[in-house]
Length: 538
Length: 73
Image (cartoon, rainbow over all chains, first blue to last red; front, side, top):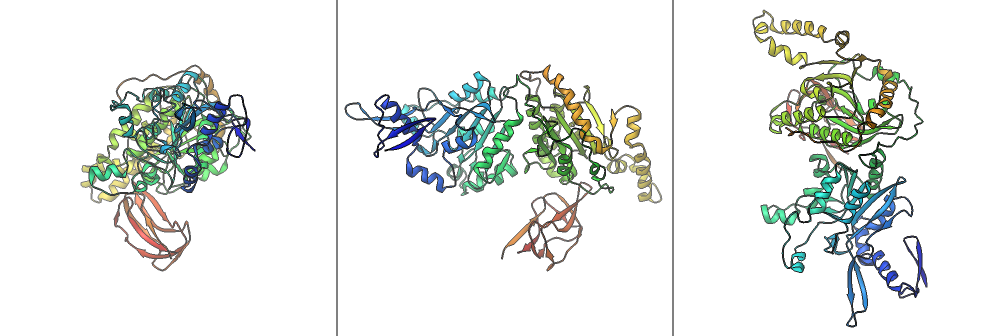
């Protein structure tokens, strides 16, 4: 005899695995079958591939003993000639509610050990397109976590049904609705294609594991059939493509434990739903911490870059930074962080990549992050060092102008409070995407700030072409004109005109930002609820 | 022995090369400086080793993901 733990109940079984309890024997038998998933061999194969089972993932993700399963008995029963139950193959999807960091969430995930996690055709779906778990998140207004490890439907379902389903009958309507209601986080923990891949995209945050997970619209067999090209699944949809290059998935990590840890971390910044404020935590880092090191962080030579990551770390609560998409669109940094325990979204240009210029990938990254923070009432802090839109043939081919103007459009519709702090450059239309300047939102600058329609260097040659060409020494004339115009570019002249609200000592950055973010709470509280959508995005 | 390709993360041009083939490099050492969007972009060694090959010269244009040099370690 030995004990098995079922949720929090212990049951006793004999050596053949028969449940000793005489009461509810069938219930226990079915529950044990569910816990056994696809069987020992399938579980061993899952582990040999460097992956956890869906139930191991749940236990690592959720607070101890908080998982309350729903649909435990869903599956396929086998009956003998007397209609007596012989065995049950559980459904390839496990779902329920649990607590994460003490707060309730709906969680669901494919069980790859059962039929490779393929879609389970029951009277009602447990999860996936239009499933119970999405409904649970919607009606109870709690976050949804998808642990994705399946490739969606199979052609065998058509054989079982006797007809093929029309696309959208089990559609993404609820998943789409959830994006405006509750936080949705997804981890891709196997090979995802079809519906599960779509669900990973219909998330506010997604993460995958380098080497053991892949995601694509269609896998290698379809590519071979359609295009005659042979490619491995890792080459086609590993993290190097899906995260670093395409930005299809936000973050990549090395282990499943880290992926689950990132989901917990992401949710720790989020309110439970759009009708609530994001959670404020107690903060040991002094609000009035002034960092003298910030005064020297910008090199005197304007052509030298510096570490914007170091700058952010010096300003926000120590250890609070959670960067989203760190390996994609690297000319802008998008991080969730805290100021005096209050969640903020940091959008900072990175001078180490294209001088912080906005290209099509960084524009898309900034747009998504602005929309995320606006939806969940997280104030935005822009740390600006942007010379403008990226230039050149490649940039034009990638529609930098259109993507950049979409960033301006989305910035113009933000309703969360924003603080714009110019660190060095703030030029042109890319500069306009860093503030909501028609509102009460603050525009601050360090003394190193400079701004305008375009940088003096590029602008002089274009605007004074004839003057320069007709000069005896054109180079000297160009430099003379640049020097003259640069004298007007002092940030203090703009401050005289009250066209920026304040120029601050860099060392005072943290106290000032903390003060205004605390002040923002009343404004955030007055604007709770779903955000409307207006107009046609360019 | 491993050969590591050091790639350019930006489009731009080579401004100056600080090292020569055969030099010992440590992770984080600046091998060369590129110029892109009017900024000096240092190219740092991703691993310890010896500079095995320089594939670009000063003033040459470089593309994203172009191999600039190789390190043997």
